[in-house]
Length: 377
Image (cartoon, rainbow, N blue to C red):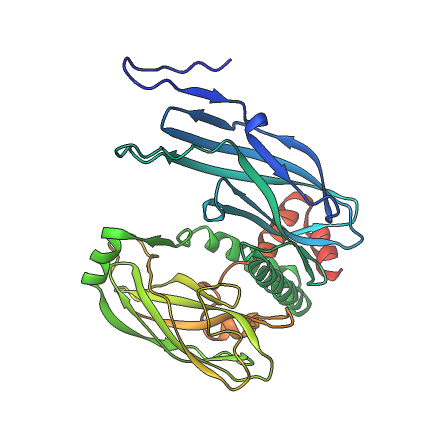
């Protein structure tokens, strides 16, 4: 039983059973099959002109394809496509016939617009939907509409995970467990000290940051073998905020590039560097007309946004910019070698791959023998 306290004079509110509200749509012929749905602490409360949705859903999925699955992405939303959010996992190693519990979380507060003359109030959503957006297989192929552009992200995580596995195995081969384990543990511990996801500012806060920002030129880090060359990187900085970054890049390889990610690193007054932001240019975005980028072609790329990336009020002087990942038209992905990142002092601020956390968890749960057997696989 759900009891709701309604103050005197307040519009009546009612709780909605999430089992009747949430619609789960998976393709009948898709590679994953829905076995069970756990609605957890999900709560939907609807009033006359507002609704609050707290979805805490877990989907138990079975891989019914013949290929191992490395990543899954589901979209959650209501009404128009722009109301959708994304839940994605990578590095899950789901073999044919195996099950996986995929969390689906969403919080939304929806209000109808105020009444104006005789205009009809917009309807509150009659349901929320959960749909499959993309599946990434271990061989790099994908499935799904990919409307949230999640396949590119999953492929980058896959490439970084494979790179880090090679690096850890090389550490063991050169110095055994005393060489491998301290680095693995250090990476996991440092990942927890790095600020959380970057947040885009809008409206008044974004405009105030633009007014206070100072121009800065970022030093370009040139990584060996990078198919994309950063010719210049500029942005404005305002107390831990990255404002309107601009890049000039050139495809110095022969294969067309459809997507690329660039990492921005800031340095504060004490000389400490921290990972500030990752910006993405994608041919999948209808707002971007500069990709695919043909071999030898040079373009200028700008992203009119304000990203809150550093500790609140932090003073930053300058920074560096480097190529984090490149995706080609054939779906292949390039990421910098871990040894190159180490040599350029980027290892601490580079993204920690999902595989690093998985391997560390395997070591803690099952010991060094299981870790080594997995790396040698």
